[in-house]
Length: 306
Ligand SMILES: Nc1ncnc2c1ncn2[C@@H]1O[C@H](COP(=O)(O)OP(=O)(O)O)[C@@H](O)[C@H]1O
Ligand SMILES: [Mg+2]
Image (tube, rainbow, N blue to C red):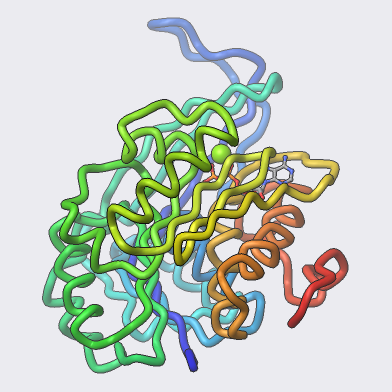
């Protein structure tokens, strides 16, 4: 039924500093180490889907800088097609994080090239969008471009997934064009306008949201798992018990996994069980894209249909 994935979204060059404590105002201190990673929600989700063996196209913008080369090479190394990745003048998107040993983290993101994805870029890939395509969006590129692209994908009959992250105002009419809206508990609280602080509350709110919009919804709840609502039915999917070391990319891995499961024609409830296994593998290793599992690694813990 579906034969390819198109992710229209962000790529970020992530710089992660590890340090004992944050510097004071006016102070420069030493960090212990630095890691450079290929990130951005768009690229992460594309990489997870590609690692599972799906044909995946990453559409978006990178800058004409060295980190642009790095981002392109890295995602290609994972099997992501970059035919619709455009180079634009200026810097690539980047993030700088200060990560403390107690788990605390502070980060800043430069939008860079991610802010330059236009309606014309969407038109350039329109021929690829058909009823056999799953198109995946997040909210790290210009909202106007995303809303336009969602309209185009709806006209062309694609299966549309929006990961509403980071939380932003999205018109109700745009949400109604989706097939699937997926957010974590923090974002769900924003979109639902009420604090989601328990599984019961999540189940209550997801049913309301799904019925109001007339689409399927998923709320991921970190270690607690996720709730999924589709066709008026709600189910709680507990997370897998694993030795988690770092949660980077958990939600992105979940979405890449969902794409695989939907291509394999699992229903959305089974798809969430499969995606839960992808995330469980991801949180067992450090880093985002490098930590995401291949299909055989997911199959070590996924016991369902495939
Ligand atoms: N500590 C953990 N152990 C096992 N699975 C986890 C853990 N943290 C997250 N997950 C899985 O990853 C999914 C997504 O994580 P979540 O934190 O909700 O997303 P995000 O990264 O967007 O905040 C969860 O639904 C869960 O299945
Ligand atoms: Mg989380």
